[in-house]
Image (cartoon, rainbow, N blue to C red; front, side, top):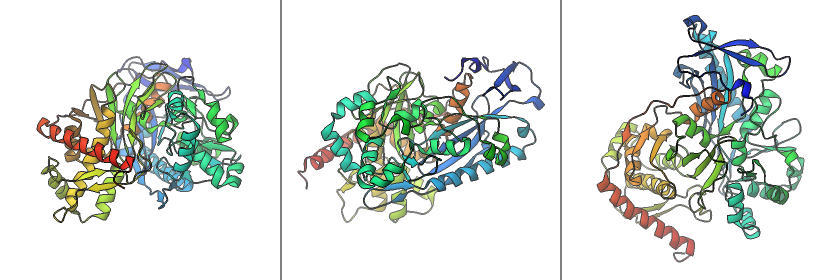
Length: 526
């Protein structure tokens, strides 16, 4: 909440926003006036939103009510570099080039519209995938790849940390588990395996912080982004000194904790003059952005995002809260906490099935085939641990398992069973949280059959988010909130009701899945 003087820009939905004065001689100097009757030529200012995902990056412009200007949307996919030992890296240079290409496309659409190009871009909001780590030198040059949340090569180091520290005590302080997804294990692993590289790193940052440094000449770490590292105390709003000491890094090697915005550097301002005077806010985690973007900010309303990975999250407007062990407690900002759980295997597992199995190439044919199979009659039980899994049990030592294969099993059986297995993990998380209803977003919206099956597995109603790009919208919402704009929730989408006759069958299937995991963890099946 960076400056109270800029927080009350719009107090009524009918008030339009216009830029009255820019004065950078004394630092950040935006001042806005409120007008109740602006002409079409004096149209509203807009926000640029950036969503940095695990598998793709998106950019788009939003108006002051956080409505996406669809024609300005740009998206480009990229691939992680995965290795047999659990590596899952992303090239910083690839990410930077992807961002620039998307910015060019969005700004090209901005200029192509005669009316839109008269509307100033006043701020930039960013959503970025949580937990990933990058090391940079003093000048901001990347020295390491981006080690993503899916990189599990440090799982042995995570196990050593659990032997050294009480994981429950660390979870109570940081809201994070001592697992390979988070920074402590990654930092200990890097120091052990690459000590010379570790010593050369001047700053450890998230990918979004590195990009902000590239574009603005400096960077800030938001409370949201810090809370996903595993090195931060979300109740005290400060770094955890005990873990910093164990990881052999000082706070000086981390960016300043702040939600204050920066401005684009002169160099990049010449390349992107439309963004030269925009306030560039520190990135927030994609999970926090998903809740903001889907309107899931009220008590008991959970955001369920199912994309490459998947998660269920609740916003709590309290200073202190504790998540059930195995789930997380992060921050949206200095005033709001985020409680929930995430699974690593979701859309990525579906993509694996489409890539590796002999399935119909026609997406509509596949959708019809799945819709015609509402019940778990395939006889398969799956542990969907293709990528090192997370909540609620964190079985980092287990790999994917399919039990019950027989000569009659088909590729469609395997696809259906893996989708159900992912949804069963989400159901386990939901059982630990006080949820009244779900707002669903993400890539799953492309498959009505998947959404119906998810509702059946959960045994709960799902409200489909009217804005499919919830994290992208959430980045815009965060920037608008920081500017003092009261953003209305997105319009209500359609509701998907569970079919109770199938929900009962899925409860039995969930119990089989949990028993299989328990047997494997105990070693009785090995």
